[in-house]
Length: 106
Image (cartoon, one colour):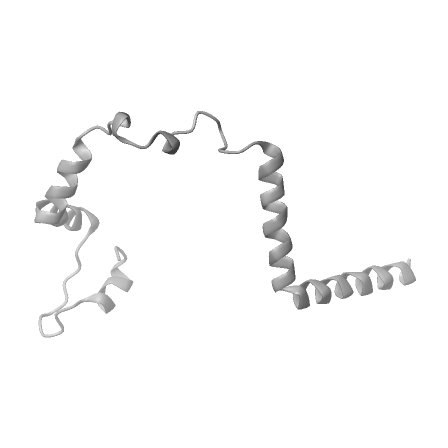
């Protein structure tokens, strides 16, 4: 938490008085900590693409063609509609009542 208002609630040592730690101090403390130094060292080494699995690197924008992508998305949406059928039925009834109400008054 970097907010002065929210940070105090996460103060671990309740016996010690709370003191606000700003973002710069926090980042410096993390980078001087052994975990921060190790992470910095690991990120400083460039990624070697030759060591990764060939199927992890796709040469296309999507791993499958557009037809298969549409089929997967449609299948997912159908499953979500089935799981929440009450909501969709309620919403359709609500919309139809609203449309019917608007048609009556126009």
